[in-house]
Amino acid sequence: MLINIQQACSLLREHDHIVILAHQKPDGDTLGSCFALLSALEALGKTARVESPDGFPARYAFLCGGYAPKEFSPEFVVSADVASLQLLGDLAAVYGSRVDLCIDHHKSNELFAAHTLLDAEAPAASQIVYHMVRELGAELTPPIANALFTGISTDTGCFKYDNVTPLTHRVAAALIEAGAEHGAINKLMFDTKSKGRIAVEGMLLDNLEYYFDDQCAVLTVYPDTPDRYGVNEDELDGLSALPRRIEGVKAGVTIREKEDGSKRISLRTGDGLDASTICSRLGGGGHKNAAGCTIHASREEAKRQILAEIWKELEMWRYERNPMH
Image (cartoon, rainbow, N blue to C red; front, side):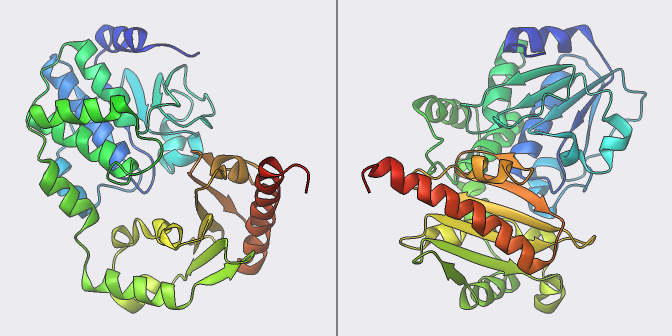
């Protein structure tokens, strides 16, 4: 059932002992949303905790460092920035059938929760949570502002993606006025990389593959990459953005092999190509310019499948631009 912000906040006011769920491989938006909502609920006297199927990455320690979740039996379950039960990882087995409220901004949301607060026009779930904090009447404290600014900044590529709207900038301004350390957050999220991460980027770019007259670029991250370069999984976040920075590339693909042998595909697009449409044909989804899917096949077969769908979209793009040819 789709609901609005007022209805979502009414549900939160009516319940206590609330669990807030982040998605697997948590990023700035899911963690920013979760911890901002946690702080707001605690300010209202609620008992709440955040759970993540993959823990809390070290790079987000400024949001959740030293976090000690309260022990209680959940009465109400919320997910933030989660488009499908699959993204809950191991937590899906625990909470999958009892998510009461889903807060999300993905148009591909599978409506798995009893109630869904969905704004597909919002560039980040954290922007939705900002309005919820306001509606709940909680004070917009510096920790809440930091969490929400992190979510919005990371999901908009530091405000440079097409999903940014005038409202996004107004919300960001309000968060800065409330004490968000925007300069430090952006430096940490976008301009701080380990030597190992820089080495990984160099290797990947040296082995980049181009297709379709250089309109598509493919990066392949091998299972031994973290060990070979002395980096952890968290340090590999954001690699998907690399191919799209190359002039002339309309579709950037990153292929990563998971422990079970499946291939995780991350797709970043521009120039009118719809990444969500492409990935949805392979069982995934996401946003217009950033989406993903999982393919259970060999590396070459996974590459063949995603390239075939990209080619279809490129052909459609060319036809729409010049239907007579």
